[in-house]
Length: 231
Image (cartoon, rainbow, N blue to C red; front, side, top):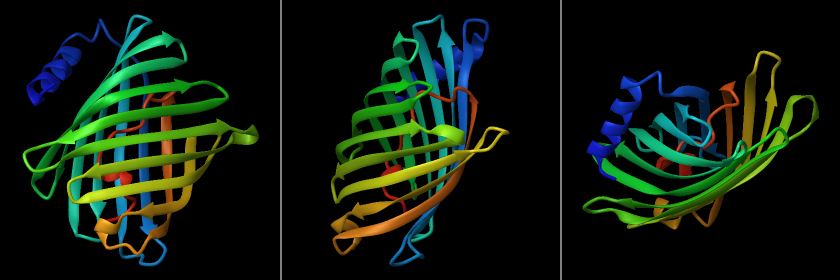
């Protein structure tokens, strides 16, 4: 899928609101940093919205912005997911997105599967990044178990292997949802990326907030910069 195809799908979705119904949306904010050097940090803001076409098909759109304090640059990303619901809680799909960092755009695309229920959320994806000078693979797995009294705990693993950058991120996550629906989030983990000048695996921490409309979007936002908590 190219950029014209992505724009055509978005235009078709916007032009026919009667055919699509918003089934969920998510807004999120986060700030993460390396514990050894807090100057290597990232602040991000974004959102996703999902539109259903009947009971089996849906489209999800993502928009995201990140400020990479370590390199004093901005990153913006947009992605579109097309999915088929196997049952009301499980979907398989494909995604295509564009990310711009310091004026250089990279296309990424791949396949994904996810499940969202009252007890747990889990998703996995595998994909590829591609432009004239940057190609490689991306993959990830993340899950969350819903506990009593508004608490949730989970974990994630993400891997990005593109020319000049081989990065693996793994973390433990926790969240607490307030009565008004706002979830406060926290994360602790490590990043292994020799190409970023890190000495082995470097620990990081992150805090943030998330608000789900309805049941929220099925899939997390996709982007290349999401793999590294700070640059």
